[in-house]
Every structure is written in structure tokens, then in C-alpha cells.
Length: 82
Picture 1 (cartoon, rainbow, N blue to C red):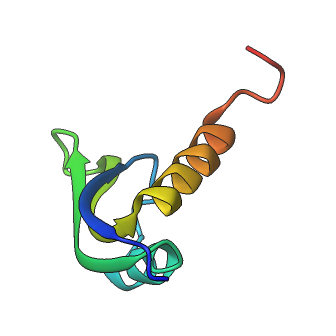
Picture 2: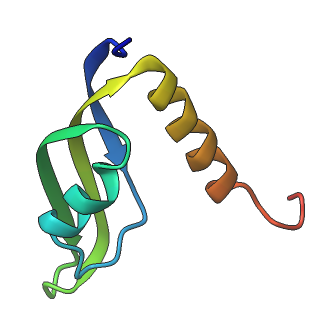
């Protein structure tokens, strides 16, 4: 039985400034069919990168999306409890 997939646009923050679209595609393809990636690098007045994030369009089942959300929440939780 195939899982019904929905197209989602995910925000991924806290990325390194050297991340590539190919790297994001490889990492997120574990969860579903990556259809598009957009990397955004915000720079300061001198042109130095300050913040890097991405938007990823992915065809993903609701079950896999929930699994991804759990992994994401666990990786962003403080280790010492706050």
C-alpha cells in the first residue's frame, strides 16, 4: 500500500554558509521526493554572510512529515533542559 504524498514547503534554518542545493537534496530525499531547493544567505553591510537558511519543496507522506517534525524538534531542544 503506497503512502499518499502531499507537497510541502519546509523552512530549514541554522545552515552553514557553504551548504549546497545538492547536499540538501541528498539529506532530505530520505523523507520524500525533493522537487526544489532555495538557499537564502543574508549578509551584513560588508557582504559577510550572517544567516543561511533554505526552503525545500518536498513530496512527503503525512506519516513521514510527522517523523521529520519529531526529529527536528529533538535536534533543536536544549540538552540541559533550558
